[in-house]
Length: 205
Image (cartoon, rainbow, N blue to C red; front, side):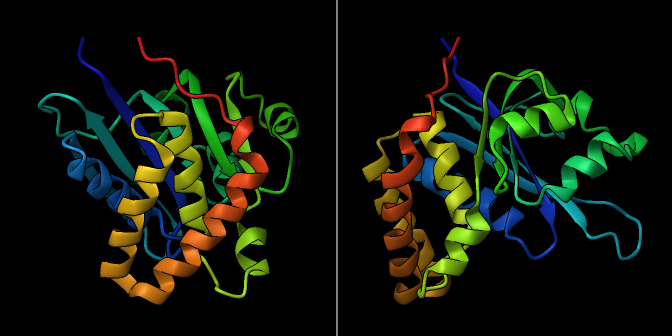
């Protein structure tokens, strides 16, 4: 049976939204999957919000359009939730782009239940991680978006986490050098000792 996942990344410009989507695509392409990664910007001048998309499949992808019903949402900045639920824009309607049971990965110090109640999110799969605090506390200055990517990969469960880390080290080294790659990988190790067991792998149809 064909297996495909569609993901939307939300955040502010400069928070690594497109980088995370691109790195994810690189990793799964190396694994032999069919992938897509592309950003979307609003046309309004000085609008700080943006999004990026991923599609991952074990067979050829023929869709080349914005995602309308995402299986997972990664939110790098909780301002996006306020933007989406309290001040919706017709051309970026958050709710129609996300499945009711989509998994949420949110960069926030708040617990998942608080997020669920505050924004009335019905999904049973809400995972929160204070990626900014993790990055700030580490002398190697790892990237918050890489913590969020790792959380998503654990949920996706398409490749073993150790295999993911090997690919990630290669990708980060090529992009930003071996020192940056090493600091991010060490930070991920510490993160995995903390909340990895809280993330339940996706159940594919």
